[in-house]
Image 1 (cartoon, helix red, strand yellow):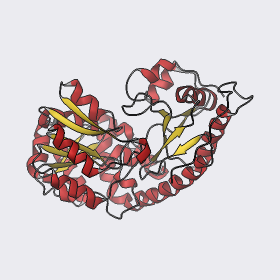
Image 2 (cartoon, one colour):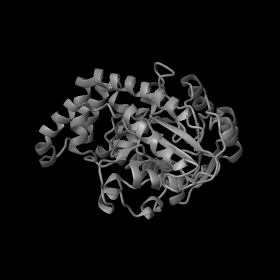
Image 3 (tube, helix red, strand yellow):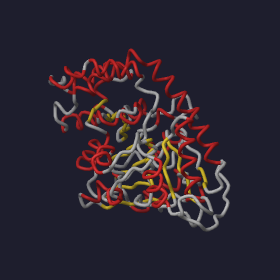
Image 4 (cartoon, one colour):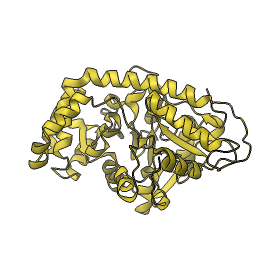
Length: 388
C-alpha cells in the first residue's frame, strides 16, 4: 500500500492538513486510518448516519432555522437557560470573537495547547503571555503557579483548556472553580472544555453551570469533537446572560447550517447511544495506552481526552515517521513539531479501536526496526518507560 502526497501540506500552518486536502493532493491506495483529528469513532451510530443520509436533500436545499431557534432546542437537551448560550460555526469562531470582544491588551495561556489560543490574539497584535508546561511534570498544569504568573505579567484575560490539547491532562472540577474565583477581577477567564465529555475521572467534570452565574467566566464546548462530526462546525459558549448575550449579538443570526440543526434535534433521542460511545472510547483509550506502552521506543502520557500524547525515543524523527506511516500504511498522525512548547519527537494519537491500533503499532515497529524493513532509522534506540 502506498499513499502519495506532497509533504509540504503538513508544514503550511500550525495545524494538520484536512482530509480533503490530502485526498485531492495524493494518490489514495486505500482507506486512510485517521489518528490525527480528534473524533468519536462510535458516534453517530450507523443508524444515525442512515437517517442523516435520508434527509440529505432537504438539509442541502433549505435554509436552517435561526440561531435562537436552534439554541432553544440545545438548551433543552443540556438543561441550561437559553440566555446563557451562544452558538457558533465551530469553537474557533468563538475564539476569534472572544479575542475581538474581550482581549484588549493581553491574554495568558499555558503552552502547549490548542494553537488558536496563541495564534488568534497574536494575529490581532495582542500580547500573549505563555506559561510553559514541563515535560518532567507530565505537562500537568499547576494552577497556583499559573495564577501567580498571570498576576506577575498583568494579564487581563486567562485561558485554561481542560482536558488540555495535546496532552489530555485533566484538572479536577473543584480546582478549576477555585482558580476562576481567584481571578474574578480579570476581564475574562475562558475554560475551554472541548474534550470534557471524554473524562471518566469525575462524574460531572464540567463547570458550565457554575460559569453561568459568575461575572467573568465563559466555557467553550465543541459538538464536532464530541460527536466526531467536525464537518458540521458546531461549537457553543456558556456564560452569564450578559456575556452570552454579547456574543450572540455579535454573531450572525444564521451562522449555523442545516446539518448542525439536524444533529441538535437528533440528540435528545440518541442520548443513550452517546453515553455508550463514551464508555467504549474510554475502554479503547486504556487498551491503546497499554499497547503503545509496550513499545520501548515510546513514552505514553496519561490522558482523559480522546487522544494520547507520546514521545519518541532519541534518534527517531517524528516527521519521517509521520510520512512513513502515511505513505506506507495509510495512517495519518499528528506530529507536534509545529506546536508551541513541543518538538517533532512528540505525537498526538487519537484513540481508535483495537484493529486500527494494531495497524499503527505495526507501522511504528517497521519504521523503528534497527535493521532491514524500510531502511529508515537504522541506528539503535534508547529504551524508555511509560508514564503511568
